[in-house]
Amino acid sequence: MQGQSGIRYAAMSDLGRRDRNEDAFVTDRVAGYHIFAVADGLGGHASGDVASRMAVEILAEVTGEGFLETEPAALLERAFQRANTEICTYNREHRLNAGTTLSAAIVGESGRCWIGTVGDSRTHIITPSSIWHTRDQSYVQGLVESGMLSPAEAMLHPKKNILTQALGLAPRLQVDLDLVELAGAVLVISSDGLHDSVPASTIQEIVLANEPDAACRQLIDAARAAASTDNITVIVVRDDRP
Image (tube, rainbow, N blue to C red):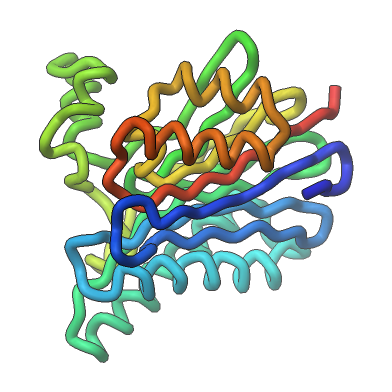
């Protein structure tokens, strides 16, 4: 899809080898800002699909009302906290334990990109010479940061899906916030069905060589070929501004 100001993007979600798709995503444009997000409902909890859908819907609702008086970083924090509160309330009312990850990016006209993350869905910023991505809030990420595992070993670790934060499971939530420059780069947001199976170098190669819609399809195909057992959701955003 062609956005304004040199932004082109596409989004795609695939069932993968699961019986139900518990991922959700949103692409939106409000008050001159682009909003992109991926949420991954926790498969071990009842109604993970409800939690992920609530997360992206609340994000869209909060950003839709807030840009006139609130900075993007504060708006992300507000959206994440409201989503967490509402999913927790839903769980209490229905006696459930639904949870979800959420990785969201707000892209401004200047190419500034504000990112919020809870869980292990990732936002990547990719150029021909570099790959940056958000920090997973997970048990295995802690092992990587302590030097006990390499990133390659983390992809194969049996406890790689254990999260240290998720929306809906506790009243207190830590949102990781980042600010990066997107102009001239490619933004990729994915559920772990992609990046737990496909190396960052392969993601880089695919998104730099293809338009966003073709890149989405090739990334999903790569994850399926790598025997990903999860739902696979990906948003690819090309920023062609100099």
